[in-house]
Length: 274
Image (cartoon, rainbow, N blue to C red; front, side, top):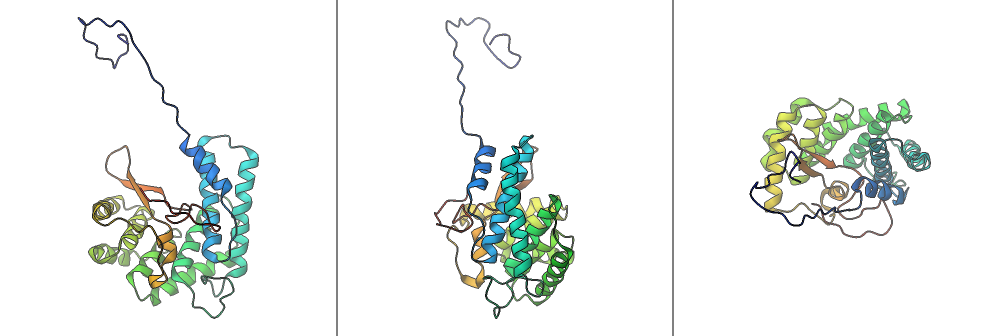
C-alpha cells in the first residue's frame, strides 16, 4: 500500500497487518439483459406490445454495450422487436393506435401513438425494418393528434414521440417550458427528454433540476391510474441521474421497466422508482 500512488500512509506509523476486501455484486447490465429475456412478449393491447418491444430493444442495446453479445440471446430479443413491429403494422388505424386492438370504435389514443412513434424510430435506428407505409402515416397522425390535443399532458407525450423523428414543434416545446410549473411530473419529464432529443442540453438540465426538486416533495406516481386515459405514461416512470461529468440529469432507463410491472403483460408486481 505504501507504494500505491493514491495511498496516504503516515511515514512514522507502523502497520502490522493489512487487509484488502473485494465486494462482488451481480452485474447490473447482466440483470437488465436477463430481465429483457424473461419478459413476456405480445399482449392484449398496443401498449403491452410496444412495452415488450422496447424492453427487447433495451436488452439489445445493453448486449451491444458489453461487446460480442451471445448470438442466441440477441436473436431472441430481435424476434420480439420484429414481432412488435409486425403487430403494430397490422393494428394501425388511420396512422395511429387505439388502446386495445379490437376497439375499432375507440378514438386514437395520443399516449399510445406517441409511445409507438418512439418504439418505431428506435427500432429503425437499431437496424430493424420499419415499413414506410407504417412510419409515415404514424408521423402524420401524430402531428394531427397534437393539433387536436386538449391537454398539455397529451401534447407533451406527442412532442416526445415526434421528437424521435425530428417532427416536434419546437416553439410549442418552449411554450411548455414556460408553463412547466403547471405541468404534472410525467409531462415535465417528457419535456426534459424532448429537449434532450432536440439536442438542447441547457434547457433539459434546467427542467430536470426542477423535476428532481419537485419529486423530492411529491414522489413520482407508483400505481398507474386511469385519470385522463394516462395509464401508459404513469406505467413508465422516467428515472433520472446526474452524469459523472457534472450537471446533466439524464435518463437512466426510459423504456420497458414499469413502476407497476417489470414485465410487459402477465402478473403485475409493484416496484418503486428510485
